[in-house]
Length: 157
Image (cartoon, rainbow, N blue to C red; front, side, top):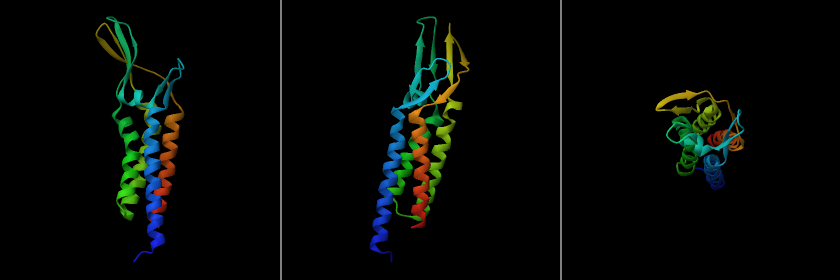
C-alpha cells in the first residue's frame, strides 16, 4: 500500500503536469512564427489554423494554409497533462511523457511545415517562405520538454 505522502506527491505532480500542459497549449495565442523576409509576426493560432496575409481583391490572395501537425502539436500537451492528472498509473505517466516529447518535436517542426500559398487569377501555387520561430512557439516547446521530464519523474514515484 502506498504511503499518504507518496499519494500526495503523485497528485501534486499530476496537477503540475496539467498546468504545464495547459500553459504549453495557451502559447498558441502568442507570437509563433516570424517571416524572415518581411519581419511579419504571426501567432500560433494564425499559423496552425491558417490566415489570409494579403487580399488583392479579384486578382488574388496570399495566405498561410491550415497545418494539421501544428494543431496536434499545440493540443497534445494539454491532453497529456489531463491524462497525467486524471489517471494515476505509471504506464499513463510514461505515455504522457512520450506525448510531451512528441509535441515538442512537432512544435520545433512547425517552421518547416508551414505552407504559404499565393492565388493569382484563380491559380494557386505554394510560395517558399523562410520562417523563424518566435517566443510563443519556443516557450511551448520548452514547456513540453520540461513537462516530459516531470512526467518521467512521476513514473519513478
